[in-house]
Length: 204
Image 1 (cartoon, rainbow, N blue to C red):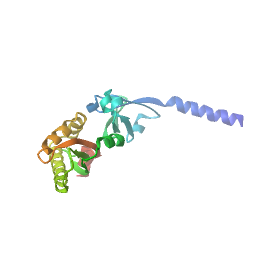
Image 2: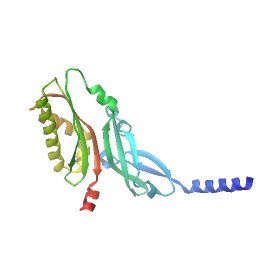
Image 3: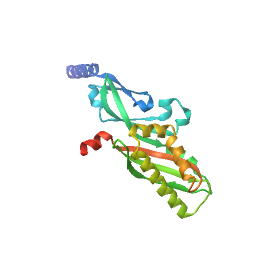
Image 4: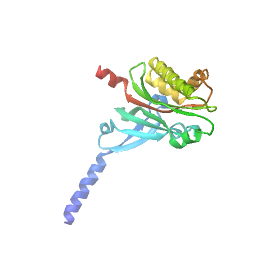
């Protein structure tokens, strides 16, 4: 019995020695920041897996602590696992703090396509400066979808991600919606890549 255990232990040790650490890096929009390391038998085993992190951890910016990002491991290059953004998500507690009394909240969700063919689900959240009518809320919802859909159709996926990270998309949207009704908050609560440009091309 003792010999059997020793043999098994030896095999486990050998298996462990064959494993190696593989560094996982974020895409260029995140300056290829390190997302950590994973111990695997073969680096290729990581392809297809996802990694989640807080945006503050990646950027070092305290203002980003309310945002979680998830990455999809696409490939292994130069011994590193390279990724693409899977989703950007404002944490629920941060959304809750946005909401105040005597104001209306608009949640929306729709799928749009980027210039390079990526299919993305966008979930904006709008909070008005004061209570308003249902007709105004409907106009805000429709114009939000129309503006974002049009902008995405003219912009590549990676550039859209950069604009959301820099809050450029949110600021431009708020400025255009001001003509309908002034907003206290105009945020992208979540953006999720449903299909990459490559996946869309393969389906064609």
